[in-house]
Image 1 (spheres, rainbow, N blue to C red):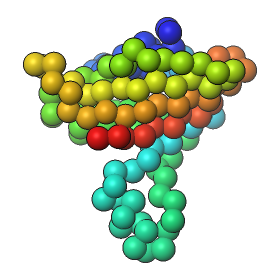
Image 2: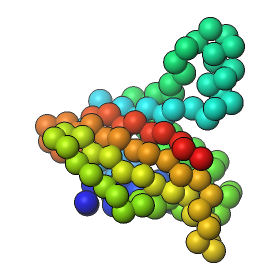
Image 3: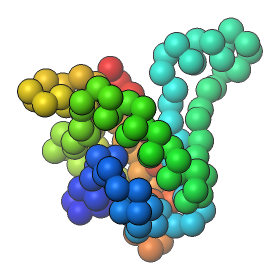
Image 4: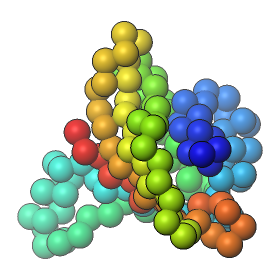
Length: 133
């Protein structure tokens, strides 16, 4: 599915202007990216009385910052790239697929699940990102 290919390419993109253009093509201006925080963050939040810890990026500028930081702080330093696992499925306006972070030797370093709710124009209204390992 082209949407998934473009989504995955976004997280591997190193050029800031290309990243911004990709974001505008993938999400409407009021689009949302939701991230299930790592277990350690969820445990800390629960200890403070927050049952549901969710990180949210809303709108182009915030999504752009989230993608930039994800690439510069996690992917690039670890020498990994994001790739889809080839199990994309769609039901109505919902698309789901698993992804993995892979190093230069092809070893999988982390895996996750993406659930995308699409807007009427086919762009991502809400992006739910879950880390599995």
